[in-house]
Length: 253
Image 1 (cartoon, rainbow, N blue to C red):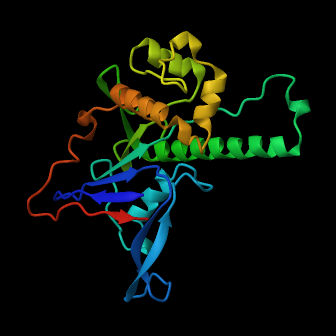
Image 2: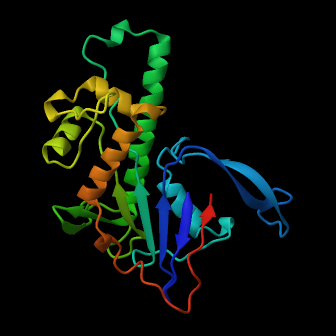
Image 3: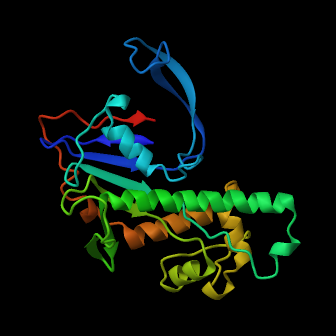
């Protein structure tokens, strides 16, 4: 999870949560494995998608790492000081067709439970973040703020600004993107798939965590969602640089 601090006098920060395939990198860690250590050593680590774990969507955890003193950061909170951008990899519903539940064995139920737990964890984390944040998004090319009115913090005292990019992984969703000429999926031979030919079998292939054979289609979906949901206006007030502040740095957590 890269953390990019952007310099302004009020301490604006952009927190960006991404999803990656595992890769190796070197970090500095306390020599005695305690946060209080003042001596650090290099350690080779494997960077794993933040969605692998009980948080699933790790946005709330990243926010806590940014503001809590235990992590050595203690950045100031506030909707005008912290911008948390969560880039999702899509979500789906763990549905079972009527009459099929009684046919499943223990191994099949285990797979269903694992997928359902990941979906519910992701949903829970998003709901928690929304309770303490001001949300921004693009709706029909217009900037929209705070679609969710219920908060557990007083109005205008939100702890951060939250921007989430993601999509549901369903036949209906991909059909609508294709019909709007924002998405072009292809079959195994590289031929375009028309909207009325998008099936549950294709969606099931795209949902798998190891679907490396679908990278082109996943890239096309990501581009379609970016075209639909992203606009640089979302980040106004957060990306301006102050010449007296240091350049953005990156910390992998």
